[in-house]
Length: 133
Image 1 (cartoon, rainbow, N blue to C red):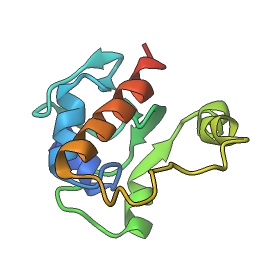
Image 2: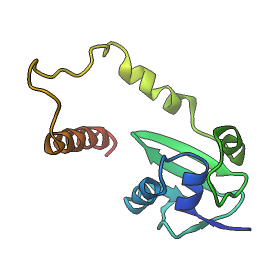
Image 3: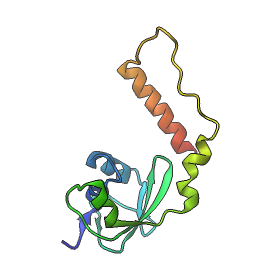
């Protein structure tokens, strides 16, 4: 095996929880190979460097080993070299400082409905990705 689909590899090395999620992120142009957006069917080979935007973080990964199937976390981390800068890795810590209060929902209003939950997720996603542009 000398090449693997990029969405399949990202899923196999546990960058994304599901292959569908990996495919969607690639389709949105948040994964770049050689600074060019790629399609989910693009093949990666050993030595390729990827830039992956995941939840507002810019991860830089170098492919060391190709995988076709999902493996455990200890094996997955040996398949890539993480070149992400220290600043980027600490972005969450810097953002989170002083924000200890959790989300609030009026007492007695119950759990959010499916429609409300989707609206909340869309709102959060919009805020998260607006900071990036």
